[in-house]
Amino acid sequence: MASTAGQVMRRMASTAGQVIRCKAAVAWEAGKPLMIEEVEVAPPQAMEVRLKILFTSLCHTDVYFWEAKGQTPLFPRIFGHEAGAIVESVGEGVTDLKPGDHVLPVFTGECKECRQCKSEESNMCDLLRINTDRGVMLNDGKSRFSIRGQPIYHFVGTSTFSEYTVVHVGCAAKINPAAPLDKVCVLSCGISTGLGATLNVAKPNKGSSVAIFGLGAVGLAAAEGARISGASRIIGVDLNSNRFEEAKKFGVTEFVNPKDHDKPVQEVIADMTNGGVDRSVECTGSISAMVSAFECVHDGWGVAVLVGVPNKDDAFKTHPMNILNERTLKGTFFGNYKPRSDLPSVVEKYMNKELELEKFITHEVPFSEINKAFEYMLSGASLRCIIRMDA
Image (cartoon, rainbow, N blue to C red; front, side):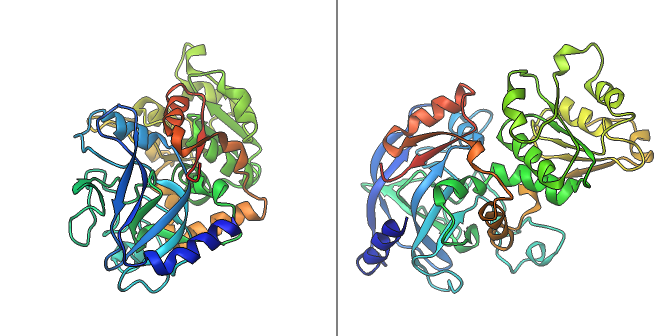
């Protein structure tokens, strides 16, 4: 890592303010394999930074929009939003980042100026909230990527499937330079979302019981949060019974497959726990799972947290008595973490060996084989696949 950082620093004088030609994995069409192309990356403008991506990883969000399921296709495009990077150069007005800083680019930002950012209760920046339909930069409404004069669209303001990218300064969280970027890069999205949903929103007490609905990467991160909190019972709920063995590594102590029972899973969990769990975290996006997660918490003090994103036409339905009986329903976005303010402390949890990230990383491929990462995720074989940009 030190030698890589040194190489970037030595190139600063020659590349700052200049167009950089580099390799990027371009999605020309929905659902088609990415093509490694030479792209031109323009210098950062006001309040922007240009980053050298060293490691990136693949998230379900990338796959969902690459497939363009139910979305308006925006192609050609450079996907990617989980990465570890070094600042190559900064634009006008950037004062809290400098060339050589280690950062995590994040799909949602923190401008630190709007009402949301100044609130201690919110992390949903008015300026830099995720926008999957915008493929250009805020400054001038143009892309910083091009191929022979043809603009290539950005993705959620990050586009980390490129050796260099340009992001708004509010979407780059400065972190400890000693942190291994090939590990902490996974904190840019799903792992932090699940972890924060438990630690920051559900807030289980030591010795409490927690149900986790969905044992993908986000759900396992939520289970990791319950483990860190000292929960005594962590009940994993998933339609795939093969996931239980893997989930044990993240602290899951019991497993329930709704298909194995002839009554609603919330009733099964209530029977298991003498009335319901203390906390639940839903990480699937399924409306039925959301209802079950809410109705399985104990009356009087139970808290359910919704993380998964439902279909646009879905409606959440439960009897009002479930609320009147003092069950609490909450939602969360990015685990309630403010990216620039809070992600550095999450990295420190890993550095202090409180948070275990290695068990989330199931595969690794060179950048030239990025399409293998898609194959691993689509087959269900991968939690997170690290993509090495130098190979």
